[in-house]
Length: 319
Image (cartoon, rainbow, N blue to C red; front, side, top):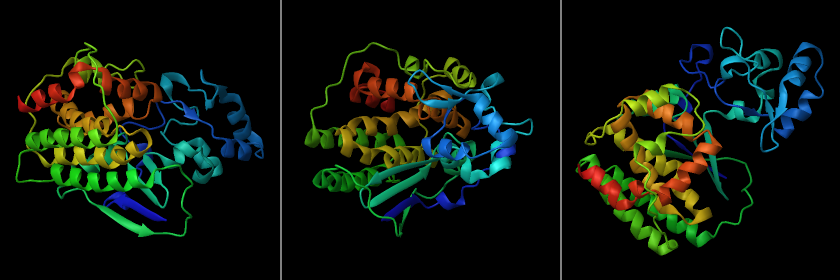
């Protein structure tokens, strides 16, 4: 299998208790089946603690019930994980072991990156000065079984390369690159499947008022936000590149590449309108990319909200 990662991927290191926004606070963590089987073999205080906080969410998933202020029940007063300390990082839940990494499997290729939802990863991508690029490595893992249409996958792979070329063309200002990217998205979408944009009248800022609030600071960002022109900064190029890497090829599953292109553009508008710093895109990511409820709503609005239509986004970029 080919493993593809951003060039900075291996430089990421968790700073644990020194993190300014712990990933062990605000989210419910699923207790995956493999971890649960291991916990059944434990004894002593850690087994009692695990058993005492297991619960079910509204979807029937087994979760760890959060403590006061939405803190993980294993997060101690030093912001360290008592489960990690007691039984080792390798036996914590899969979600905890993987965060902030994401994985997209495409048969013989696995793509992995780090998410803006982690402040450290967000800072890394914010401070990157070179165009975001990727490293391929061969490993011994077998290809993942899938039902991907090979022709569509290779078509999208070529299209994504062009999308990167558009976004990283520093001969043009960022806003003009993003306009070209939207036009390219329309062109590619026409080759895949009909895409019907809606007329939902929701206001642009209200798109980001998520029903499931994780950090109240995010609402403050929205309340104090203001529309303004996109800055011609490298970081905006890198934000768009992140979204293209993370989401573009997933269109092989739903044939909706235009929404993925829109996400790249909107990611730049988020920091433009709500705060030009790594903390802003971190807060958005934690609120949206790591809440299934919020993400499902956002994906729906990408197609249905008039303010997120191609023409409306181009108007925002031209301002």
